[in-house]
Length: 440
Image 1 (cartoon, rainbow, N blue to C red):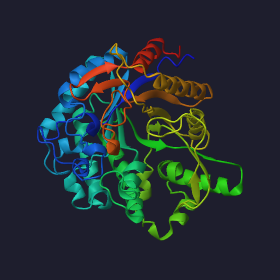
Image 2 (cartoon, one colour):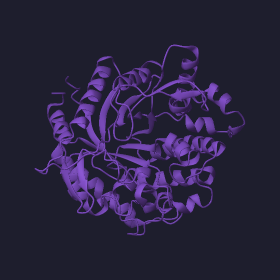
Image 3 (cartoon, one colour):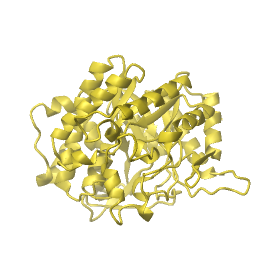
Image 4 (cartoon, rainbow, N blue to C red):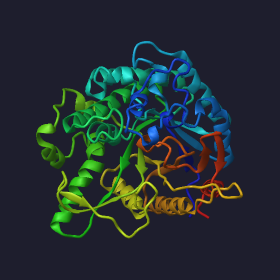
């Protein structure tokens, strides 16, 4: 299974999950700093205060990337390192860190893929309403402007948001993520404001980096009916509208799915003049985050659904392993949405990794997962899907949000007590894939 010559092999991380150094060089407080200190919100009371200490160890981590042969690295910038209060005063030491990181990547011939927002909103903005407040949208555009002015001479791939679904619904409806709100109308309004702010940031990026590639990263969980009954298919359709169609329809079609708007009813928001034009700003690429699928049947949930467990393998975080869903998703993005260039910006699996007596980590399950999903990518490319690259989640074990440090997604094992990094079996497999530009 040979991949195209210009296929980009990469790995991904995010700022709060790996950087640590939360009180250094003028960094402002974020909603995740506050959320982690709220009792009962994060497993074991874990925080990102130290995480993988990447802020101090970035040179070693880039050398690790180079040893794997990575062609690209996807990372996010911490908004509060640049604007400690979310807007207004710029902290030059924060900009300087990412300046050094980008130079280090380029020195190792690794292409930087920069995500502006991966969930760590400055707490100062949350204090005045966060993503519910339209003032945050202009603050985000100003942040995009400053970052792209500083780094756009070297960084040519920018994504505005990572997984607006998670930001809006896990953070503001289910309360599982920061800021921990539990209100559907709030979550829907946040979802819309994220789409509008995305367009505002795209404008800033295009102005400052006209030769760049600019896009957004969405998470997709393909929905399958348990049977072909009308009840099961109707439930799957609604779950699909919520998990998948909601954001991509807004970006590529300029409207939210009518069946979902009707379903949400009185919780829906009012659009302002100009919102539609902003959220449909043309994008150069779509980042696709994929981990698993959902199998549903007619039931009693909000979308008249119940979730069904299959006989397939499940990861340590409880997600079914079903690589066919990735192929199906990529084909759908090509045929139904005529999507632009696609990148798998996250794909990976959590397993209960242990260090063997010889000091190695034999994560056969992760290697199987990786091999099967790369095969799905290859099949999609053969069918004409414009898939340009693949970013493994994650470069290393890290702070896994509400799961704390309980779940390990990395292809590099991190001993959090010593910060020692050890490549797992799956990393050596990925190294061979990259070297051959093919699945061995």
